Image (cartoon, one colour):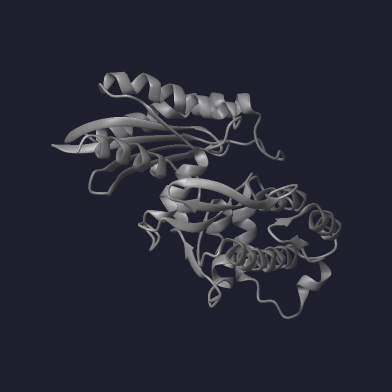
Length: 315
């Protein structure tokens, strides 16, 4: 009989449910974007929680039907943003409580992991880093811009943005330019297709990098002043040029500080075509990008983490 592991992730952007099997196949991958009112920059936690509660029955029903030829051996969920003490966001209660309800029905225990651990696992599982015990992990998402060291299953923060994230920078400038939230994907598409004829990025200040610390509020202020002065294509291109420039610096600094050469990118911002294209030929370190579909919020990594733990303990 086939055995499946169920994963649930309820972030502040998306409701996700996934089903994987013991042969490492992704059997089901269901995601529903949370609805954000036009002209706003995200959701209040209580609104996100309500939408997750409304979305989960449909996705869970589809996942359970996908396992009709076998047995679901466990339910896992993300229950906090990061694997550190005190990390908490109410939106994760929706998935956590569903896992607690489903697990007894499956005659098993619910497993819990952080949203960040799920991102990492989904990203590395299908790259050359799958069996690597040590590497640098860049988590660039809507609310997170962190440089981390992965060491035998443990995650340690090495550096981060000291104010806003790359995702927040793009969303805030995108909102001023009239894009719907989240704005990163649309701005990336525009920047990637723009045929730059000059040094547009010189109209924006460089992002100041100090080792593995950096600030983005300065470039946010400068870009905000240009919103009504230049075409949206030029603005998007300039922003991504400066972000890419910053990323290259912190990649170099992270490899030098850690002594590691392997670098894995994950998180929604890491699915950017502009950034991926711009990192080609960067041979100072070994760069790994997850498939774009595995970079954005999903429950696949959570499902694999829960399944791995069950299958290892029951071999």
